[in-house]
Figure 1 (cartoon, one colour):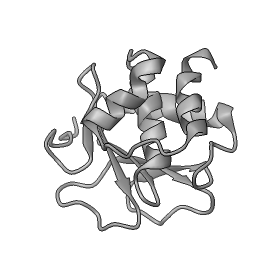
Figure 2 (spheres, rainbow, N blue to C red; figure 1 turned 180 degrees about the vertical axis):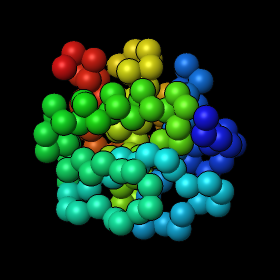
Figure 3 (tube, helix red, strand yellow; figure 1 turned 45 degrees about the vertical axis):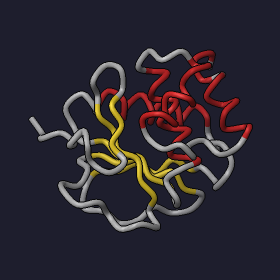
Length: 144
């Protein structure tokens, strides 16, 4: 079994089930400690070369995922893997797209969709989920 994230680590959020996931901005240095074993890069272009397994989810800045079905599949995979792996979500700044993805993970973990943005802002970053359409995406995530 992989050593999981330090719950007090930078950008680490605990979901209600106990799963730990890390969010971060790719424009910032990699936090100290172990790296992820699986990462989801939420970017409009190509993802960075990393030594761990990763998925690129095409997601332009300040917008929504380009392919909502692919997004749902990648989010479910990451949520499942977070049981015993170090899962990280990363976009440019670590707030809008990353916060939106983390809020969708919270929905998968049982947080009501209309409370998921507040949950992520409380447990990850106050500025998470930047746009009205990102908030709407989260609120409708359980329906899709």
